[in-house]
Length: 139
Image (cartoon, rainbow, N blue to C red; front, top):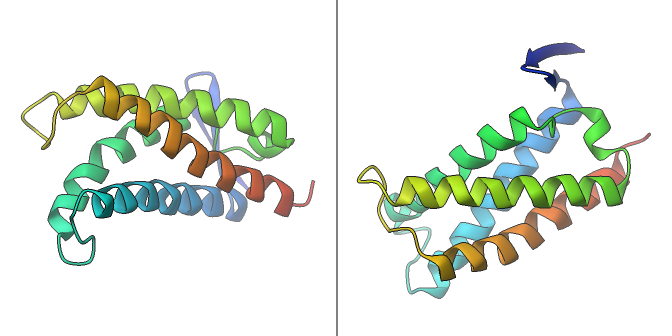
């Protein structure tokens, strides 16, 4: 197992953390794709729009999850701990995503209602995934 140090936190490069990262990307993509679909966009046709909506969330998540140690085996030691850390990281990731959406770099804008829905729905999807991952990984 390879370990990279980022500040005081670690990112472990292993098959377990690789699976966590892949699952995180799938969960966030699912959240965005379903959201776009409910707003009348077809994620399979409107790929550019979905990618434009997805990018700020992925950027926010990568920044927060990496720095907060969510890519270590210890981040999924217990379901309760995984849920708390995941949800808090997601809230911070949404704040970053909303800040990015307020710029000219991404479509959309920063909206409190969208941030709250993102925190709630995206947080549920990510926490469900991380709970399953925690239960599946042998301790």
